[in-house]
Length: 217
Image (cartoon, rainbow, N blue to C red; front, top):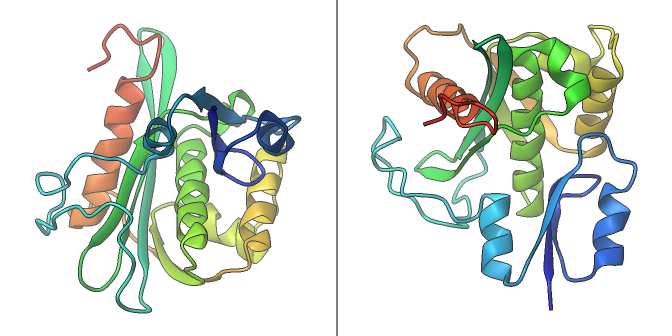
């Protein structure tokens, strides 16, 4: 038996048949998916099994996989990165989900669709928002406050900015379709806010570790 992990598709998740997986990824721009022999490996690919965040979180929170919120207050910090290295651009994204008491989830990656790369850092930030909200929604969370540093993330969803590319239009439509109650809170980049600095660092590290980068760490 195989387990098909869909990290970026119509409905991210782990599926046990190829037809179910194919339905989520066929024709979906920038789909990211992979088959695994065990469910544990598939969940790890989805970001369920992550290192302890004690050394990463500025609050010193201990990591608990699949932790559920103990309050209604869910806080999501997101960021993206675009690094020029040896004449090429490398992309990364990162997010962290917290409730009022602890870190619930932390993830980062470098899978950014080719058609989105013209947006530079913003492409990674969009990926972070989408992955974070899918994670929250899959666990029954219906509301969240999103902390971000690029105004378009909120304004495209709220309709106060026009979506001028297929990527930003798809982003706005996907976020609205999730049906979550979202509060958007803009923060100043590189202002020393601990969680903003954390996701910024993780996104840059993800970009540096992207395939093809001979400076990967």
